[in-house]
Image (tube, rainbow, N blue to C red):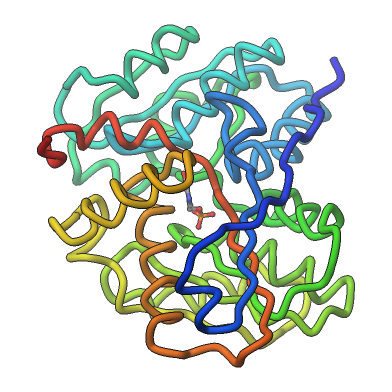
Length: 297
Ligand SMILES: *Cc1c(COP(=O)(O)O)cnc(C)c1O
């Protein structure tokens, strides 16, 4: 089976009076359009991982996630598309929501585990699938060197060179992939990561571990809005306005925080006039469905 997708991810310019006033050109790379469910960075992170499973002759993907995990949903859909079985370990008590509906719809089996045992993923894998030669371990969020290798290909697709690239960070795998891609192409572009978790500086060691070669990059750690999955009325308002003005869906967990950070830094004149900035839309728009009640109309 050929494990690949045709990548459709155009770069579009974002129009806004603020950017005109600050003398900036801002573009968005639409990785959210790659696939409706295997969206954005999740496909890029899975590509070589699935190819490696296939190479080892393993056809049962075992992975991990929280109740709103885009990675779990993407893995379920990718497994269905490319002929794998899939099992997802879920952190926490048995619940049902839109994400898990999508997982089950694509045939993923879910195992709910308490938070304590969820911490040791290798142990969970061993306990349940230790003697199953068909089982293939994929870490939470698709975090791995293969994941970063897949993301690095995003840089091959860029139509021009930018001064800055912005991207939301969870595990940091996507960040590591982009930074490695920039290094491979010897580009002067500065990578700006926006951690969506509180205390995002811890990400540096995770990112550095996945880099092909050490490199400089920036992390803007003040845009977590209280932590992973947390939001504020200010962020919700920003997201409503952005969607209304651009027609591009963004979510409160990842891309909403990243774009908020960008607009805030632009307003604070963080970038030199004449700069070209590219933001990566890493997908995950279904995250909106888990936060509907935060939007008041
Ligand atoms: C998972 C996800 C991320 C985080 O990617 P990492 O590689 O884990 O840093 C960013 N944006 C979206 C939309 C995601 O779903």
